[in-house]
Length: 294
Ligand SMILES: C[S@@+](CC[C@H](N)C(=O)[O-])C[C@H]1O[C@@H](n2cnc3c(N)ncnc32)[C@H](O)[C@@H]1O
Image 1: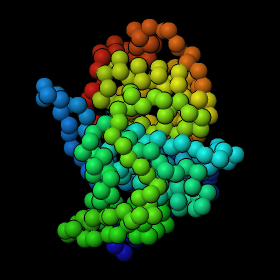
Image 2 (image 1 turned 90 degrees about the vertical axis):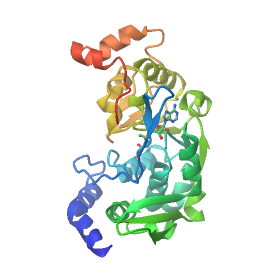
Image 3 (image 1 turned 45 degrees about the vertical axis):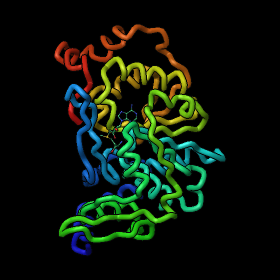
Image 4 (image 1 turned 135 degrees about the vertical axis):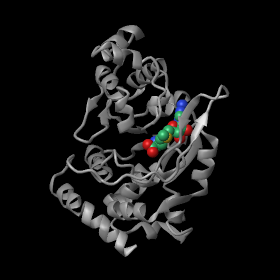
């Protein structure tokens, strides 16, 4: 680990300094890993979705994101954090670790994180609290948690390159997992001070489904709430759609503030599609289905 750690520090050491100096720095990229991956297909054999995920996926500046939430909700007693499409739990635990490391006791008002996924196997895995990580990824985790990972996880060597990390009760109690379809979970999402993460899952929806979901979120989410997407979602123009619906980009990449009302209520889907994909016809064709590989 020490060699790996020093490699990580060599690669990312500057990033730590920069992000500590500049409040919401967007300049540096951290390494990315895929701890678990796989494809779920429909009965027809078509791709339904992928379940790929990892600790600290590099399309979110986790520490800056948590500091932003801490600022935004400094006067709130309770903040509801919902992590939809959480796959097998690496994402909500990354967030929980960052909350604990960055905020200490003050993290309590964000817990428990409500972690949801449509896939039952994902949720069973997540509840078991066992995670495969490789040495390089462990270094990435240490980068975000200042080497405190082993305080929250028992780590066992699995083979030459990978480890099994088992969540301890202290971290386990910060995340509650449930199997749920995001389309059926709007009542929860409509509460004040809600932070909704649904990241790297939009490309598996058809364009009609994507618009339907954004339309519902724009209608239901309160102005005090925050929505977080992933880099893959923007590749499929979800960022453009959010902008049209009045979601406001923040200084943190992929993090949006909810508009508080649906400014496109009643607008036809075809008009919205025309506007979003007005750039050129090839992009319009490509928008007919968002269901491409992530
Ligand atoms: C590529 S993974 C993304 C995992 C994680 N959000 C990340 O960024 O690392 C996509 C996940 O979306 C989930 N998913 C697909 N449709 C969903 C739905 N309608 N409601 C909730 N989760 C869904 C899948 O089960 C899968 O775990």
